[in-house]
Amino acid sequence: MTQKVAVLGTGKIGEALLSGMIRAGWAPTDLLVTARRPERAEELRARHGVTPVTNAEAAKTADTLILTVKPQDMGTLLTELAPHVPTDRLVISGAAGIPTSFLEERLAQGTPVVRVMTNTPALVDEAMSVISAGSHATAGHLAHAEEIFGAVGKTLRVPESQQDACTALSGSGPAYFFYLVEAMTDAGILLGLPRDKAHDLIVQSAIGAAIMLRDSGEHPVKLRENVTSPAGTTINAIRELENHGVRAALIAALEAARDRSRELASGSS
Ligand SMILES: NC(=O)C1=CN([C@@H]2O[C@H](COP(=O)(O)OP(=O)(O)OC[C@H]3O[C@@H](n4cnc5c(N)ncnc54)[C@H](O)[C@@H]3O)[C@@H](O)[C@H]2O)C=CC1
Ligand SMILES: O=C(O)[C@@H]1CCC=N1
Image 1 (cartoon, rainbow, N blue to C red):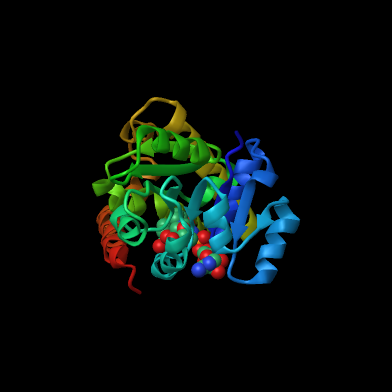
Image 2 (cartoon, protein in one colour):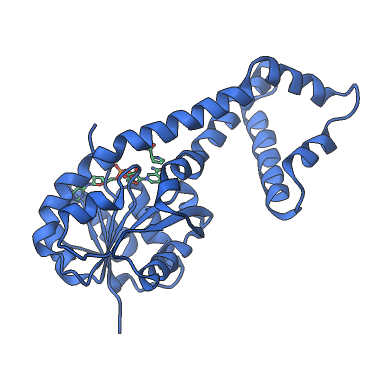
């Protein structure tokens, strides 16, 4: 039996997921999308061959609903959807901070809900998606969510109590690396390199380091030690990073992201 999947609120994350599902072999005809603006809906149809529908039609027609609106829009969307979602539908929330109980309280009693925090590398099939079950979701529902998000990268099941921390690490994580590349490219400019060359050097170094972290089996400390020669260049840079409290800044930054995710739990702005 064909399983229809609807992405409701198809913005950056919704479209990244949708395009990855199509790359992984989902038939566009089995994918429904909703968008606030009709021009956006038509853009998605033209680009991916998917079918734009209303939120209510998606709720009635699709077997799985994936809600990818902003946390602040989740309450309004659920109010609109609730009368139309039969209790045998799987509802997946992709929103930061919103607990499964927020959805369960607004949908019919017994509706299975799964919470997923993915990230933008979904666009290149390298997402990290962290998955938790709500109180009515079964192993089968979790497996189905893994199948969908597995199309765009790795998946990991965690207890829902860890979702806000995971949002700080991997949901927001790509932004920290983009920020570092931006700052290191500025350093290259300061050192007299043209911007494009500085960018290429830093990006290739980041890719090389990321692949070593993933594939070498070595601890990051060991990998850094291997670069850090006695009385060499790297240790001078590391001393400055320590002097400027970069490690403490990163710990504080991720704690702030975790705290913001907790604040979003109410769906408030
Ligand atoms: N951008 C990111 O890196 C990540 C975002 N997320 C989560 O994904 C969700 C979406 O984020 P983005 O894609 O960045 O936002 P976005 O703003 O690009 O997409 C949200 C879309 O939902 C639409 N929308 C809002 N209310 C609607 C309604 N009632 N009916 C139909 N469409 C509606 C908006 O028009 C917009 O196009 C958020 O909850 C965010 O926390 C999760 C992981 C990473
Ligand atoms: O910044 C945000 O709130 C979203 C959630 C994780 C990444 N972007």
